[in-house]
Image (tube, rainbow, N blue to C red; front, side, top):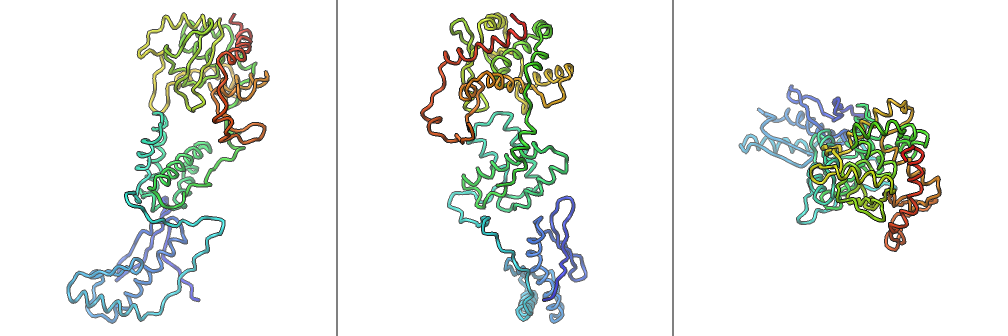
Length: 444
């Protein structure tokens, strides 16, 4: 069998394959719209066959001008300008083509049996079979209750992917497009966690398009995660131990914070006593606080997860101190703290930055410590005190997915039969350990 050296090449940096040859003494260059060499080869062969056939046919057709008619063997398109001469030339060229010996084609590699083929389903009436990733995102926003920061993040990732894929619609995208995008992200020096996060977002948008019948192929992002469980554990933020907490929450520093920046002081204290997320604290309103048996209770009404909607108690001594602050506060919209929502960054960004400067001053930079590490400290502090996983999860605002190696996802007992602990039970469990923390930092 003869070997054919095809004039195709991948253009840098896009990786798109092009066909480059000559026709009637002039350069002929066409994009093959793929980054896969095998697919580019299959697309290029019939084009080259047509060009070679036209070269041979032109020798037997007088006064032939190639531009007067068009033959597209791949898509079975035959055009002429409509004049008798052009039509005759086209028919003679086709006659020559039919008498040519068929050229061998490259064998198509068989699909492995354990991988699903991308079989196109028949679009149903009323669907949109040709849609861009940005259009999917617009639909996604309508059905999903995304926070402003999440909207900004999703839109940025979707736009980046759309631009990289040269504004292709979803039905024109291939697995190779997504893999090339992932590779480019790593070449730009983006962290493993960042690439994983972007992969998850694009995967969610493809899955949504499939469910909404806007996309008819299998998801090209499935099984393209770049992080293992070990990677996630290694890249996660660390938890403070008690000695490190005492270094941050020492009496002298806390008194200075209370005098110079009381907003920051009360955020610090609520965090170490409740383990709330920074965004849950900085967005608190006065109306979320209520009295219960000489204690202040925080009613969390907006959280990252469904499990985050909960009630958390504060011990009596600190409750009395916080009540005095509440009486003095007069921020707009009933806000308890001064922090403003920043687009794409939430309202806890200022707290996180100031906390990072404290860590730098204290020399606590040898591990991956952030403000969130205080939340992890409280969870671990309660765990070491023997508090059950379910109780800790309700206090911290976590969903229970696994316990003692048993998968509890979609567990009927947990989802439908189990109720949250009563507020009285939370107080009895949590308050002794809150008082212990306060005693350790010498605030009584």
